Image (tube, rainbow, N blue to C red; front, side, top):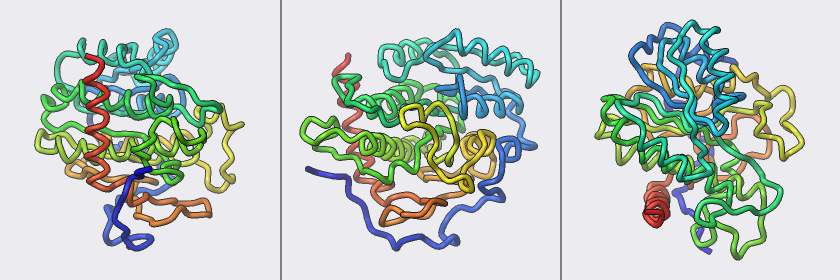
Length: 324
């Protein structure tokens, strides 16, 4: 089976090689956006009915952005939006139905969108489904939801992002990508025995590769794209795992977990940065093997490899073309 390949940089690039911010793992979303004015900016956030999505929306709305909560359950989204309007004093918090597991839903949203879009946060996701499920086009459900749905969303909104003249695409990936590259010859577990963690890891690697290729293709349109690991945060994402298993010293609050997303979405410090993977509000070092200790896990070389990114983009484009 063909697995994603990658160059093999030395384990743990030196910090001098990487983008460094004045923030760290203890910084909150409010910290990283302090002093930033997003008036006149429009943002879309998927999965914004709980956890990191809500806090990301709160921070952007508090800074003056017009925020659309792109959610699977609009009734739940409306309750969140009402609370955010009260908490931030910003009435421009809207709700739209977007189920990234359903490409028809994604297409309906992108077709209806008008005007520029300055910030797209691909935040929704599912994790470690206990049994093999198939979604869009018969593809494994975690890959279909975490990657294909957000790929279709970003591609469908490309024109709006380009119109903004300086847009950001932020994709919430995970250190889980360290458990598997994209196995191009068997993405959907039609030959391999299903492995919940491996499938999750593959989908998260795909999200990082999407950010790499989107930045390569779209930077000339004024669109920068990055991916991130939010850290170990107790959210609904762990409903199939029995809760968060990370040792207490390495856990984050929701406010800390959303900091990297908000930083990449709004900070002027990364206006010209793209195609990278961040954790703890800083660019992550590349690693050539999965760390065995908790902490700052880094990013696998295969998740940033340009050839893998281009191949995956072509794969996704083929899937979308078959639905026309």
